[in-house]
Length: 503
Image (cartoon, rainbow, N blue to C red; front, side, top):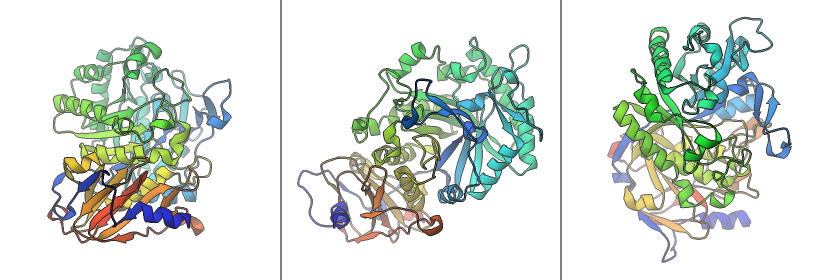
């Protein structure tokens, strides 16, 4: 009975509250804004997951000896992991993270037990073969970054491609084409680069140019991404200079390079997790559905769009790493509470011109879409699965009125003329509604019996026998007012819209 009542409240064609937010949207006549990549919604597999090493310690195992714990390499052959990753394809699989800045590729069948001087970890041939095999099995393409620590430099401190070239050549020999690569993961975080405390933006510019030119000669089909710097919201952006030491300004990184990337890339984190306890930069679950929290990404997109237009006009804009919060995510990043941020930011980034959105991570730490021990889907996985099922590459303009209610639209995936609308009602206590001039099917996500569970149209989302993904059963609605229950995320699907922009 409870599930049935939730379903009736989630999507209804009956009356609405007089003061509820309302949007009038005609799916058949929505104009096109632009196209995003068919691999738009993608994800990260941290380099340290591949090699094994010190990664974020689970909250239920936090001890006085720090925020990290030693972890074995991720088993990328696990059938459940592959099945669930494949369901999100096609996608880019980014193997990177701060740990990649100092990872040594051992181009031998007998890798060293410890990393050479100037590196922190070792990537073996076997481990990289596992990545290539995994990516090919899940309809992925590889995105990565290269080591730039002291070990990858000559006596004068210049970056040299020797170890990276061995890695790229080995990848090519086993059919592992690198689709795109950043030079350094988050080069504005000087402390995490590993190139030395006196490293300058001028030296970065010199090294980026060397990398860019070398990549064009060695792997010309690989897109060079950059700068890949991370955007931190205020006041953390200012505090970072005090807490983490000096940070480079992204404009200076671009200014001091004479060559420019093929794609303009950036990272974004709206806050830091409780695990890292950074002053003034932590957010609790209380903000999870607030407008300010959901829209905080807008400033970063606007800032990087301006830099893109100034330094690399005409290039695509990729968000190559983002999640609920830096340092492995808060406890609530694994719950339905974060699904509002995840879904809304995926949609608003596409509407604002981001061509690729890479969630951090697939299956590691609290911000992973899958539980890192069992690979059980978390609510954000189900949100990603619905996006992948309905939202095509062409973004449609729903207008300012719909934007206030958080209504987005794309051409319906794998359809001619069809339209998929996404309506996010993050309001905890008030319904909203969308007026539509035609009938369709609704798919509504709400929280399940626990914060770790999600419902689709009132029914629990769960894997079936042999980890089969559940059938997505919609609920029919007639033309008119479609009510959106409080704290709900709804896809309205119109396969017969005959929208000329979607032909």
